[in-house]
Length: 186
Image (cartoon, one colour):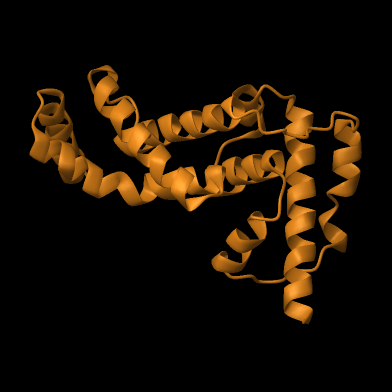
């Protein structure tokens, strides 16, 4: 990000802290689409993601005075959105299936890329395939592949082991690959 846009965002943030509703609206306008997409990838439901978007922005504006400009504002908001979305899913007591029965070496053996075919898929096809994953696999896949979190961060967020995160990602990739291959071969 350039220094100019950072200064503009800093000014908007500071005005929002002071209660300026126009500045708050501008922050909402700038970030709402990205935050919605983050919520949607975790919640897997448009209405739930829209509700979560509103809750995230309420929380962001409530905690805005705590933002210390140590990271980008967008990254700070995204972290809040991810945490709130995960907490909502946990609160709903959605059964997450995390299997700890495989060791890290099992994962390494299964993840041999020499045997994998390279196939290009559209983003839309992958996002549609995500809907067929279990909540746990979808969250791990979204956090790792789409949001850029590392397995140790995902493990901490979801209260699972790093090995479980890796196994869930592998299962998600395999399931998505098989779904996409079925669609392409039809």
